[in-house]
Image (cartoon, rainbow, N blue to C red; front, side, top):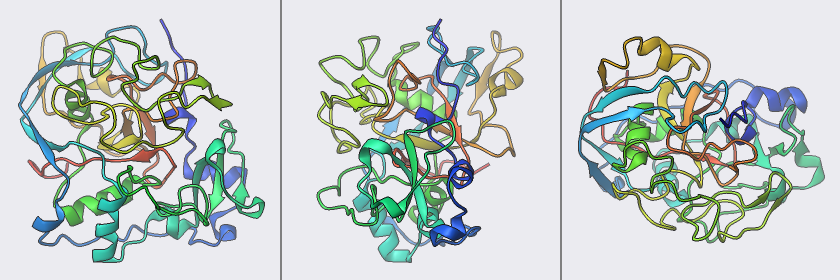
Length: 342
């Protein structure tokens, strides 16, 4: 049984660990404790430009059935879950999508207000004075002053040619603010796993069991020696356009790989165990995560995931970070507002 990578997604540091290993946010030129500036809901029919797929309701076995789970992530016990039908974005939110939201509302992300975000060391394009870190425990991450959704590598970078790439440097709060504007919501963790599987019961990946990091490449992940060398054999060092490779059985692009996707739920490593005492005999309908807690669920892995480190590009893989943390490999997709946010 493989049990590796017990930290946050691909070793992604939270905001506080970057501050502690570098400098306080106030020293980086941002507000050390901004409150989320949620955009008010508006009539957004024209702004819902992300195509959605209708995913029929059904049951599935949630959790890792293959033995590839990561210690501490809480991917077991296996339990039966029923999910109601829903409409889900076929892609993650892109830079162009998020730009429309910002143009309409004037929203400033938490990375912009804190003054920095986490950038992977091979994607750095910053001046030395702007680089803080490395982050404690994850030395391949740096806190970079001026890094945000418009400037993924440093203050001098831009979005030229990246309109159809996933928006990154998104905190959970940022994703929630976008949802308020768009009249949508984040998927629950159970919905995220159900839709990622594409209708294939028990499979490791959305397409089945064929290897993820060998040709023919099916998704944007790491090839090479993590974290020193990415060969780019799949065509990308960092993010790929959201409609790259092939869709899963529900018509969703890159439901694993490319970027981590925030979910609605709070995270707890024992949430499956606490909520599924009689899991072998009971089907749970539309479950939500634990209330409270300091972290939120991330799903799907990213361009940094590799079998030698975290192996979290699997359907069942879970990760987490604090809701005010942002990084260069995390974004989100939305689902229809079938029910109120718990």
